[in-house]
Image 1 (cartoon, rainbow, N blue to C red):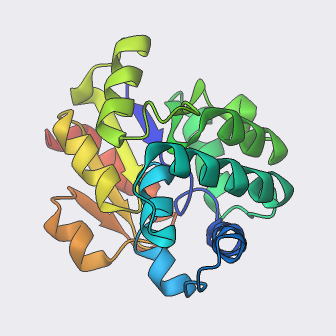
Image 2: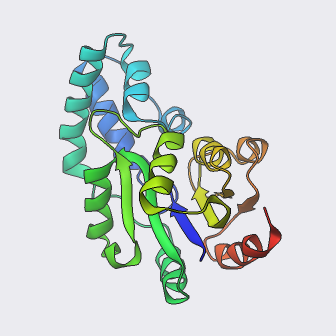
Length: 219
């Protein structure tokens, strides 16, 4: 049976405006200049600590932890202001109807990811929602996917990672999964292709035929 692992930010939901607002409110609190959304976009993917350390020029773990608390306070007020990308829900429902098992695999905090999925009434479409712990564990996508494979007893050869950043593609390939890069998120298309994505799709509807091809190509 085929299994799909879906990234969240930039793949299922358009969270960039909310994330950028909250990061820049945090920067303002620390007396730092705001970053343009284009600069933030290129750094979305890893666990939050890495981004905050660079944005705020922080070097000590306690300072980074304090910054994360500030960001969380802002984000909790805005995390539901992230719409699904057009046609994503219909694609998710198609895969559920044909018996494909689906999971969310995101570096976002597990608790937030679960709440966002439920806010869009998508909980019934996923067998599970996996994210990072609030102490930073599983913020690395490779570590997260390894956990999902172990917990759910998945077969990597029958598992497809779908995401919009190089971190998604590298993690999927590291775990010997087929990878599909999507063009509507926050990653650079050329970088995604160079990272070794097996497939690249421009629109959500293309995922249906692409997954069919991936099931039979032996990637």
